[in-house]
Length: 132
Image (tube, rainbow, N blue to C red; front, top):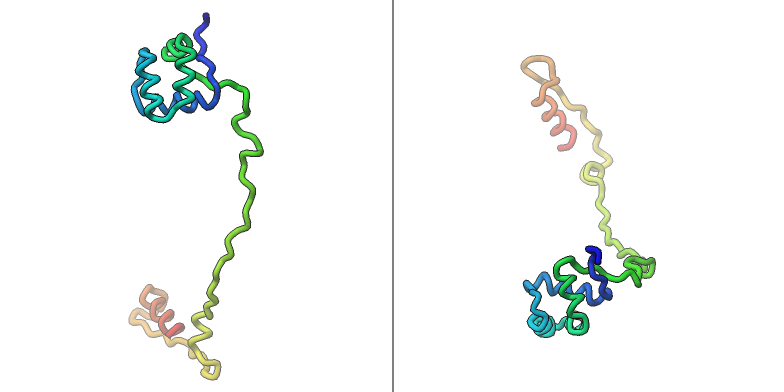
């Protein structure tokens, strides 16, 4: 007998994995069956009861699901639903909505102590004069 994992039906494999995560099961099959039934894993409990020797080998070497059913098929992908309708609010542009059309736009006057007018403070002043 080679060291291969024991193949079990898919639903039994899922229940055995869940049972393994919940409890620390042992080679005592009666105790494991009782714990599986207490937690609602009836398929695993019935399989262990019917296949005690295979369970003991699988306990040491591991279990794997039988390859009867494909795990991912195109039928498993849900159908695409329509996207949710977006609610939008229209906002007026801030510059054109706040300034009346009849007033002429003034050009900013630059005054700086150094005479260059390209510093950070000059840029802030230009921005304030432009938008306020």
